[in-house]
Image (cartoon, rainbow, N blue to C red; front, side):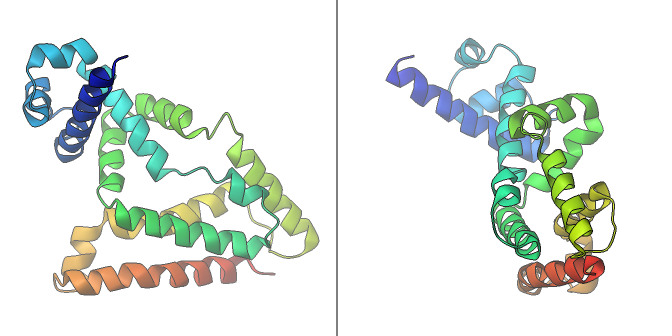
Length: 207
């Protein structure tokens, strides 16, 4: 692939990401992506023949941002509670920098759950790297050591991720009802969530 092809593909990719995130798969037309990229529709189809193929590439990239690889954290030598703290802090920081991602993913999950699930698994390496099994083994080891109370690993993982994501998915409600549409107050709340969620999770499982 020539340098010009690479640059053109990057322009298309960036434009498609903006349009897909704003309008979702069903609301996006290839003509809009071509216009956003500043190219004609024929050139767009030369690089990406179908909207489905282009969307798959975009969603995979977004998924890699939203579901960072956590195998490094799980396999590190730091204490268990520090691993939880590090994951929560990193995850909330990441979503704060990409606040459009949660609702984008939720919208596409409602549209085509099976396809989205497959893309998420492949793009993030969740299944290939056996991330959940490694997490489950870690949890079971901590239970045996008496560090934490007995808890099913799947519940702990969903609890952590849910507590991190929920304020972003429900932003319009929280920002309006709790903070009277004060964006600064809402953003300060998000920052404080890192310590709050860490404390809540650890205190709920600490033996």
